[in-house]
Image (cartoon, rainbow, N blue to C red; front, side, top):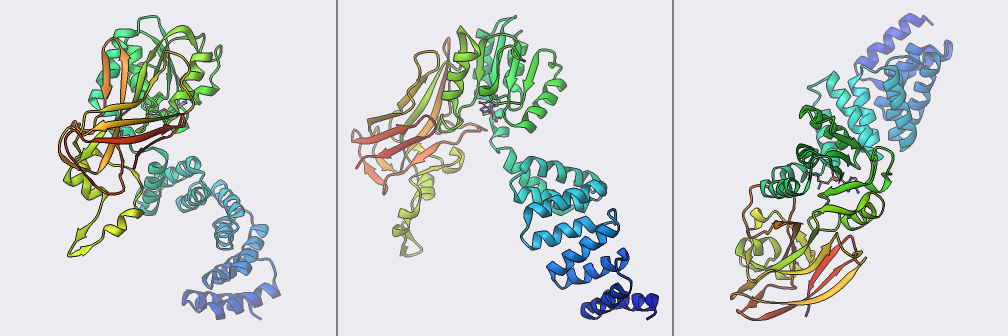
Length: 440
Ligand SMILES: C[S@@+](CC[C@H](N)C(=O)[O-])C[C@H]1O[C@@H](n2cnc3c(N)ncnc32)[C@H](O)[C@@H]1O
């Protein structure tokens, strides 16, 4: 057999997509002269084209054995392993591919995809960002990067820092209560905004941030604002901070905005309790000092259209309503709720006082303040910083941007209420979650 001629014929078949003929010729050459990387590579490619994953894998592995730096081989080993469902092994092969060929954008993209499949979001983002640095118009990588960023950075971060009334309340409280020379501990720095306000008030600030890439970016924001000498950002959960390390002593002020839309689910209660016990002076100023869950009866045509269905296009769809969750969150500007009662606070938390109970169950009533159709109990949050500085994100007040979304807790069906009619509710929290329900 003339090896060169046979190889040329096989390549022609391969280029024309005649995979079986190409495979047969490569196999003949491989049998006659085993282990030539150029042959096993091409054989692997035609096996891959026929989706023969097991033999393709074995063939690429032989190529890698003959020439470990053969361009593309680790990448193809990874692809075959992926097709065979061996995800961890595929990731190892993609890692090797990136190590051998760091300038290969596609290799980095595939490694990023493999990491993402295993929920390793941070390293996936690193790889896809490197892929885009190599090839900025790599649209598949742009899509993956955007999905990963969405997964990593909750979308409320930007409207939250653009929430001027929220920022103003914090700034007013900081100006009133933070003094030059204070040591301020912040829990959860995000963009670094509140830490910078405290530094501007003359304090030395130690701020922690649980999410590594947010901590890193906060450092950059703080440096860009010329405040790096006044603020230390530590990438850690507050509960892992120790006095004597980056925090030189117990802090004079605790600053935090780890207030979730339901107030509790960002775990403010245990975080503040832990900081008070270990990281603050006994009479530390705590900002916010108090806060809680506020609610009111809500109606409105637009809100109802988001919560209940009924007569539609001549049909009655109301039987569909029981599928809908009894608690949803919407941007208030989208659903335009209308208040049907005065507000009430089922839960209030004092961060300066006695330990807050780990769970509470209360019952309360609300009289309708007006006739109307009640479609939800609307819920929002309030904060009290002391010294008369307060804030609430009522869904009934128009606000250009907010990171918080009010909750809407639903009755079984819309209720026609008359002014003065009293409705009864259960309210429960377990320290992390809040549940509100209409009592029958
Ligand atoms: C709602 S954001 C507030 C960010 C910033 N302080 C502001 O008000 O603009 C809360 C941030 O705190 C972080 N975080 C929440 N609990 C934390 C904790 N116990 N320790 C460290 N970081 C925390 C979150 O990852 C998030 O980035």
